Length: 77
Image (cartoon, rainbow, N blue to C red; front, side, top):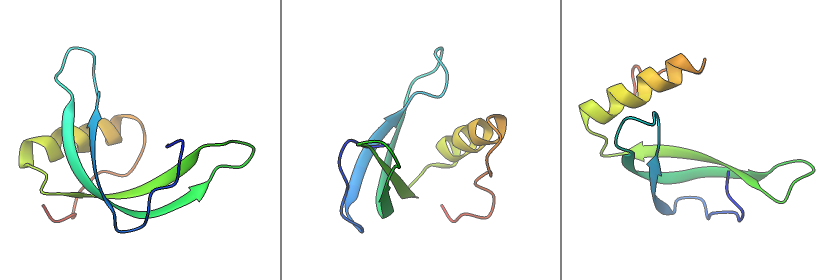
């Protein structure tokens, strides 16, 4: 989520806290889409991660699998 829309194809950097006992994941991504959230002043963003290390990809994939989303299997790194 974001308080403002991000232009499609723009680069962004983000840090994700996946677990309190671990260092945050510092990632680069490209905005693929955005949309306004109903009844909110926030926006959802679709991101494509770029130049992600195998270790970071494993951490992210494990986290996504744990919360019930799709893993990063088959996504080029």
